[in-house]
Image 1: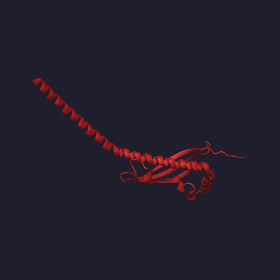
Image 2: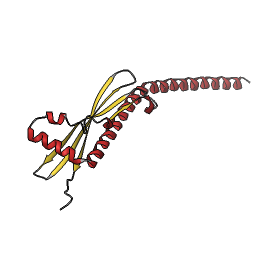
Image 3: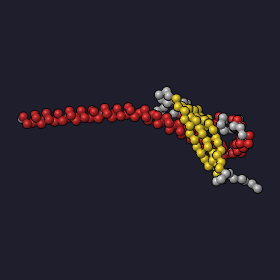
Image 4: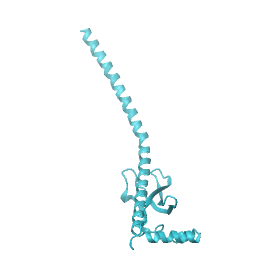
Length: 169
């Protein structure tokens, strides 16, 4: 009879030790989740901003592909006059409302509902006559406020190679 009681006592002690270990693991796990959530929100904010910037740059590339003559004419006018103010009047790309994204809470992720603003900052034609290559450098700027109220401004560059061909006689 004594042997049976001591076995139950040992089993009770082992059950209490096992329950204590499980409780400590649960506390550690919840602490890890609490510390990783801010990082997840920050990564979500950054990735959302970059996706919008790349999407806007793709829209600018599409507009350039559809109407390249206007952009080439503005670049030639700027290079011939040696004045950067000529490109300031080029509202075709830089100040086009279609190439500006203002996202409010309607298109947000599950973490963040803060507004985000993306616009084309510059479009530059890069040429290298030695290798007969041209490229278009599109710089977008992103302004957003993260979930913690901190304001961010980020720039994303996208460079695309251009093949200029002459169609016609």
